[in-house]
Length: 66
Image (cartoon, rainbow, N blue to C red; front, side):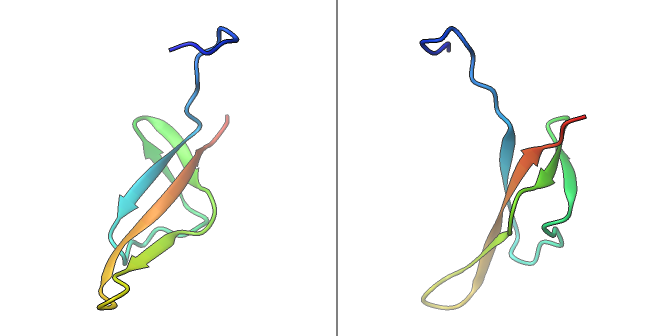
């Protein structure tokens, strides 16, 4: 779908959902759907606020140029 300037939107990153104890760090890179990406910022590790049980992590990725 084109916007009012006649340009198509471009995806520059991805969000990956993983286990709470995922070994990924903020200095890692990975390939998603054939696109090389690096971790963008801190990894959000989520716990259930009522039980404290580890639930998962959210990893934001940014495309690596070149």
